[in-house]
Amino acid sequence: MASSIAKTNGGGNGDGFGGARRAKRPRQYLKWDDANGWRDRDDVRPSEVLVLVGVCEFLQRWSKDGDRNVSTTIDDLPLPDLETLNESIPVAEWPIGRDGKKELPFKYNVGFTLVDPATGMSFFYANSTWGARALYDDISEAVITMRGLRGDQCVPVVKLGQRPMKSKRFGSVIRPDMQIIGWKAPGGGGGNALPVPSAPQLAGPTEEESPLPEPETAPPQPRLAKRPIQLSEYTLAVMSEPKPVTTEEYMNDSLEDLYRGHE
Image (cartoon, rainbow, N blue to C red; front, side, top):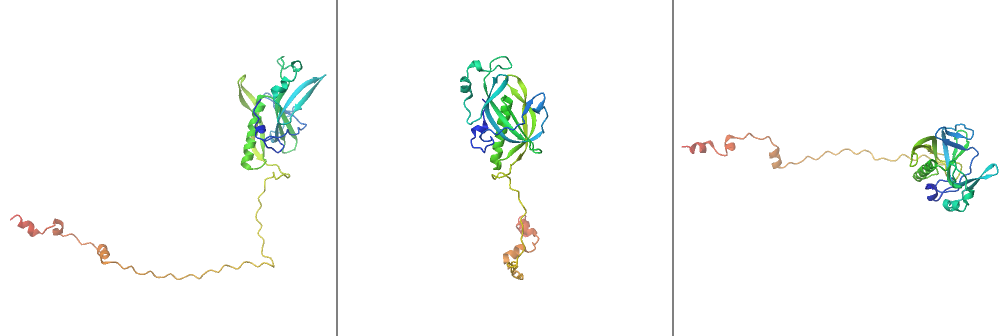
């Protein structure tokens, strides 16, 4: 059984994200295959952009009742152990799969409830394939993460499509996809609507209130003249114009002494 992010994270508000009871199914069902893409039960392509308002997980069994196929669904969380549940059913009652062999009566399913934001029409897509489970885990994790970041019960706006997936048995295959292209926070109570900031309203003074007086400011003060700086004699000497060096200072001796030494 695929891991369930929505179930293991606990909490929830009744829409399936973060652990909750399965949402009520709408009458309009969606189906998907890699050849025809997304279609409703009348084989009409739905709107490409929908709002994903809830996810769910459940166990389902199909059995024969005369000429009719009867569905038995278990959706109370936590779900019972799938292996133990199937072992409790006699093998003789197991259905025959497409390959002509016996297959497990109860299967783990994941479901998605979507709404067309333009018409309000709701859709439901569910499947037990590994591709649907991968989609369920990916989108559940994204919703839980975004709700933690935003701090509201936002839901994703998705674009229906498909994407490749690696399969150990069949190699590269195509699976259904719902690309998240935006987020919405549902309104209508519960504090879920995003607050819309409004411009502050500045009211004028009333008869009971008078405008605040202008703050008193001190008159500008005249600038004081700077006191002259007294320089020391040493500083004046250093800053004075330098005198040229004499020949005697350069030779550190007098010319007379120099000639007297050669006599």
